[in-house]
Figure 1 (spheres, rainbow, N blue to C red):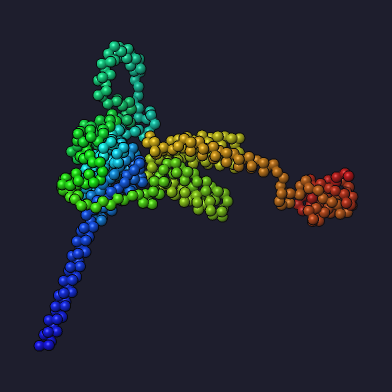
Figure 2 (cartoon, rainbow, N blue to C red):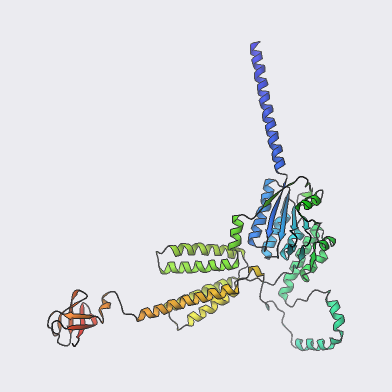
Length: 478
């Protein structure tokens, strides 16, 4: 009987213990489920480039891994690089979490690359007093590349046509306002038509206005938030995030895995700001910073090779050069420009060791300037090199190199100050009378000397040349 009671007590205790564990696990799971009911807000401010690309892609991946139900890109951008924009759009299209692009706060814009991202997002929203558009891609190459050849007589025909149509100018201007500008070069047509097809594909995928998307690319048109909503370019106009959450609730979006109905009630908003990695990437991918890093790297390695064992210039130069190479990997760099810059530096340095009366120095300066001007093959202002920086660096480099050349020339004219050769031209004193071979006292040492003239003891003599270990001298009068 006692043994049965003990077994019953043990079984009851075990049951209570298991129930406690089950309640704990259930509570933990419920707490985790409550924690995952959140939306990730990514602040996208400024130019779309490698830094913002990395930030958005990692933010979406973090949302997918943590089980967030929504990603909101709060944008204010003037546009940016095509490569970075396409990487972001590919990540949005493949995302397992709905992505909402929200142009805010009031006064913000989603121009150029921002418009494409808006069209790619599952939900497009804007705050009042914001705008989007101006999605025309800028030409990456200088004007003239890819230009159609002009047939003979074309210019005369154009002038004749202009004179014939002068009377119809007023009516033609009204019709021309509705037409997109004509593209002069094959390159421009290629780039614009590619962009039109790309944004129309995004519009068709998200069931948004294709006609306006094409106009935004061809004619660089813009829309306000209210007009964009009316034209079915965006889905929501909301003055703040709370209003956005309220209007998102119950909407259905299409993911690759299927349709998802949004439930944004009591959704916790977690804002993620750019971390140190993104900020560092934004700094080193600034074209001006990358340009300076490359020059510091080249100069550092040059000084290390010129003065082996210095260590510090070599270490700093290697680090700067590697950072510059990483920056060039993600920037629209023209490597012909890089080659010209390095060639220019090599020519200017070569002037130090092989004087060419300025030919290498001047040629190196020209190559350096031209390479700097064509280094970034994009017309996006934020990714162009500053002309002030180019001029300043060129002047400093030229002055530095030619200062070294002047120092080297002056050094060659100075008398030798070390070794036996330094005694040529010095004055010694004869220790005895001699005519031919004798001894003189010079530099605190006793040397054998030879003179073609008689020398008296105590007379001063001047060293004219060296003959092995014998000094050839001439006596000085007085």
